[in-house]
Length: 222
Image (cartoon, rainbow, N blue to C red; front, side, top):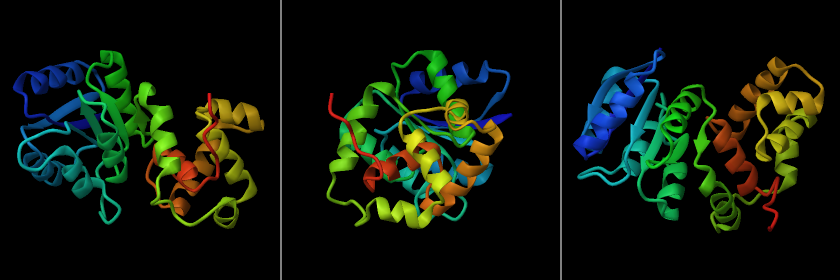
């Protein structure tokens, strides 16, 4: 059972999302919050599998709450899915840099929201498809890049791990990567489990962002 906390300052939005997720047989909404402070307190008390955070909330906002729940210095991070009506770039970048495993717009289809919660709970991460290309381009161009190149990936990863990272950055699923490399899906999963700690990331999405940040792969112009 996937245990979820929902934080949104709008009662109707909060109730609607809770009802949507609670209707799923494998999801249990264990708590709701009206702001970031309540969300952080509940998450620390209940240790959910996923916290769904709105960005704009009174007091502590969703980005700040995400940083406390899953930031780089958090010893026992809680996976965070950011849901918002605003697709402003700074919100997306802020959420990912705070350690969030996913970012989705509230006008996404209900099935897509449910799928995103499951993806985040499974450690895979998710990003709204309409945002992916411009987010990756911005991360690739930002000045706060780590001063590393392909050589860093070669130093950190084995040749096979590097192959898998490259295919992951192209948007391939575990099954597609396995087919391309002619290996078992379980083998791909095992490699990914070793790759993420080496890169200091906690989800597939963050591994992809790392690859673009460090120019292991680059954005191809349309």
